[in-house]
Image (tube, rainbow, N blue to C red):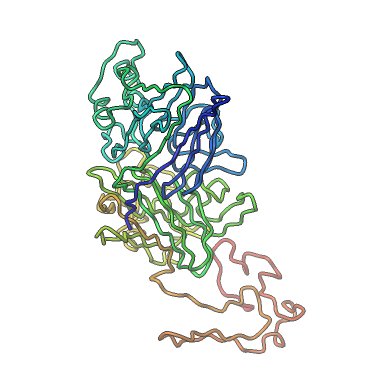
Length: 505
C-alpha cells in the first residue's frame, strides 16, 4: 500500500527561564528510520515514533538536519546516503549534501534568537521550523516534493543537490561574493520561498524571536509521499541473509519476511540474497555468496556471484525503474514484482542456473557471470562496445527478463508509477520443492523420504543393510563412511569438479 500519511519529526525547543538553554525534543513520525544529525549535539537513530531530547546552551549557534538510509556498526561507524557526517553516528562535523538544514543562533544581538531554513546544501527531507511561545508566531515551511521534481542535473541518491555542489562555479557558489539568483536557485525558491536557496539569498529568509522563545521543528514528508515498501520474503527451505543498499541486511529463515521502507528519490539501490553465512554477535562474519565486507548490515554491494534486484525510485516523469540483473552472476532464484498502484508487470528468474552452470563459471554456492571470471572487455564492456556472447546467452535464455551483460537491451528495465510497493521473493527453481537422500556423508540408519500432501506421490527410500555389508576400509563405529571421508582425494571427493563413479560409490 502506498505510504500516504504525513510523516514528521517533532523538534520542540524549550528555553529554560533560568539558563536560557534550549531543549530540543526531536520526534520521528516518519514510517521509517531517520538518523538526526546535530552540531552541537552529535546524532541519534530514531525509529518511527521515537524521540531524542537535546539540550543546547544559550549563546550557541548550530545546525540540525535529517540523515537517511544509514547503516552503522556497534561502534557508531558506517555511512548515510544523505547528510552523512564523516561516517559517524555521533556527528562532529556538518553533514554532506544533500540535506535540508535547520540553522539557529541563540541569544545574539539584542538577546534575539535567529533561525532559518537553508537549501544551500540541497534537500533531502521536507521541514517546518516555527516558534511556539512568547508571542512570536512567524515560522518557516518547506514541504514541497523537491526530490520528486528535482532537475536531472541535481538529482542525487535520496535527495536533490544544490547547484553549487554539482557545478562548483562562482555562478552558483558565490565565492567572489558577487552573484545572483539562477534558474536552479529559483527552482528551490519557488517551492520553498522562506528558505535560503543560495548563499547570497536575501535577508528576509532569516527570522528572529526574543531570546527565551520556544521552537517547534518538524521534519515532514510531503503529503503525497512516494516512499516505497519492499516486502522481502524467503520462500526457500533454507536460511537466506538478505542484503540491501540502502537498508543493511537481515537473516531470513524459511517463510520469514523483512519489510524495508525506502525514501522517495532513492537510486542506485540493490537487494540481493546471501547464502552460506555465519555471523557473530556483533554482526561480523562472512557469506559464501553475496558477501558485503563481512558485515550482516551491508554498507556496500555484495561480492559475486549473487542475483541482483536493482531499483531507482521517482525518477524521470516520477517513475520507479526496476530490474533483475545477472551481471554479478546468480545464486538464488528470484521474483521481483509490484504489489500496489495498479502496476502488474513483474520479473522472475527461477531457472536452475546453478545446476546448469557452465564449468568455467561455477563457484561455490552460485554461478559467476563471465566478466567476474575473465575480466576482459568482451565480457565486461569496459570500452562500452560489446555484444552478447555464448556465456551471456546461457543466462538470457534461462531468464529472458533479466540483464545478462552490461549492455543488454533496455527492455530488461521495467517501470511503475512512483509510490508503488514491491514484493521481493527468494524462491526455489520454478517454485518447486527439491528432495533427495544423500549418502555423500556415508550411512548410519535406513531411511524413507516421501511427500504426504498435495499431488506429489513419489518417495525415496534407502533401506538396505549397508552397515553390515560395508567394505572393511569404510567401516566406522555405528555406520559406514563415504570414501571421501576416508581417503580425502579428488577421485572420491570431486574437489576439482571432474570425477566419476567408483566401485565404492
